[in-house]
Image (cartoon, rainbow, N blue to C red):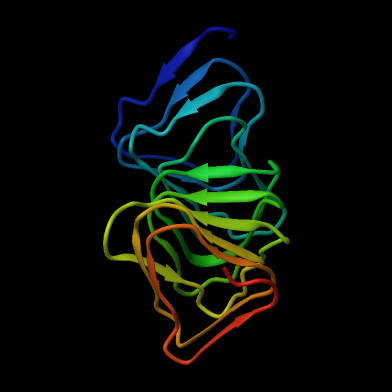
Length: 193
């Protein structure tokens, strides 16, 4: 209901289908929340509670809608799964990990506050910008064979691109911090600043 507030009391939880926050405020579990369908914040608010949201669908056509809320750690882990971000911009304050499946990122800015790791899935950059905002040392960027559109490193973090070869089809902008580039080739389709 409007103005209502709900909280998971379990550390971990699973829904085998869609999770929708239509109104009110939902506090997610502090451990891992597995979602087997779409994640839709259509008119409410969710609080990440420092937990992991793991999207585990094994079919295509799923969506991710965050509204003005923020994920902590976000993991895609569904073989055959495919998700599209509905919002123009989205934020995860922690690590974004792709273990299986194919997410299509926002067309605006996808802000990631920790590591960006694609180990064995693929991603579609969707002409958007991956913006990394960590100010910590020993942060990791792993593209895993997929290409970014635009890349911005915003804060004073220390990042390493772990791929031997990596590609951005658009611009690369290092505003602050230190980034170690791939060991062999780093192909940049736009400006490099």
